[in-house]
Length: 284
Image (cartoon, rainbow, N blue to C red; front, top):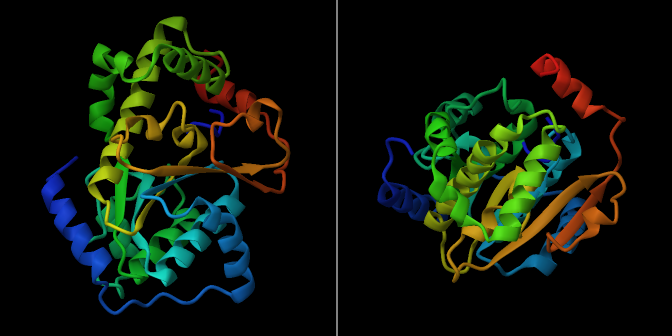
């Protein structure tokens, strides 16, 4: 699958209480200050996007430098005391580190988030998660739980959650993101899952807001697209900004204003994502 694409037992009120307690009164923060040079470079990229209630960071999942940048952004905002929470595509909605002490270890964080290391390598995302934990800032799972995916595929009400042109664009993104290998009959159900994921992430962000602070979402760039993704499902009074992390040069189409800022990183070795996808699906 192309890298563009990539609750549970807690009530929303319980999450809000825990988020507020941990984010506003961190217990013995253990975060280490960023290197001054890195902090300055990160601030130069992030400060133009602030203040905002929500910062949506869209990464390329197989670009290690993107996860490093995410950790640096979280560290910078935590050092300033303006980080309300970190929400993740990489964990299901309803999972949270909010009850953890800043000295909790990585296994405790993984357990709290019910981390799936096969889908999302902890070595890539653990540094960002633990930076927030060490700062006393809750990390929240935001993705649609697997047991809600099948019902979402059949939920026709999701078709009305995007304006008509945006819905068609999201359907086309699903086609291209799956290398035009999906049967046409699967485009609508798969688009509904994408929309349901975006709604789940938007709901998690909305529950984690704190006045004067920012909630950061880490996700694939498709979810951070402000015309198609999570931003479309935030309440109208929530201010959001979107940042895309992109490996290598961008095409004219990718320069389209679907993100508030673009952060370019060195190109990765060439990879035929569609050939890999064909192997995974047996070419079907």
